[in-house]
Image (cartoon, rainbow, N blue to C red; front, top):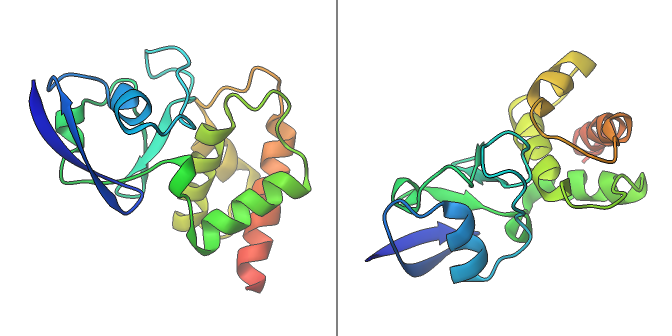
Amino acid sequence: MAAYDLSINGQTKRVEADADMPLLWAVRDLVGLTGTKYGCGLAQCGACTILMDGVPIRSCVTTVSAATGRQLTTIEGLEGKVGTAIKSAWQDLSVPQCGYCQSGQILAATALLTQKPQPTDQDIDTAMAGNICRCGTYADIRRAIHKAADLVKRS
């Protein structure tokens, strides 16, 4: 075991972990930020998505050692103009049903709007591919991303 300093949501958190421990477990179990969910453990579903230097990554297959020196954002730390717009649109349109996948969906959508402020349906489908919603709220997710884009544009 070694000590790792992780920059999570603008704060440095020191964790004692094996180098190959999945970042997901460090974030959830060692840091106590439980908004990031375990889905499949194979980087296939997107429930564990967080942002690393603004890019969505699957924390279930990213190691703690690979995350040192990087800026990590979980659902608990999502802020800024785009993050606020995404969360507002999600609430206004009542996107979640069970909600389990939504933190990963929201973070992936935030990364998309940060890079492409006015995405097309195809842009959304491409960016959100691999983020599985077992409740099937894909149309609502797409609608919320368009609404968030409009909110950002007007702000």
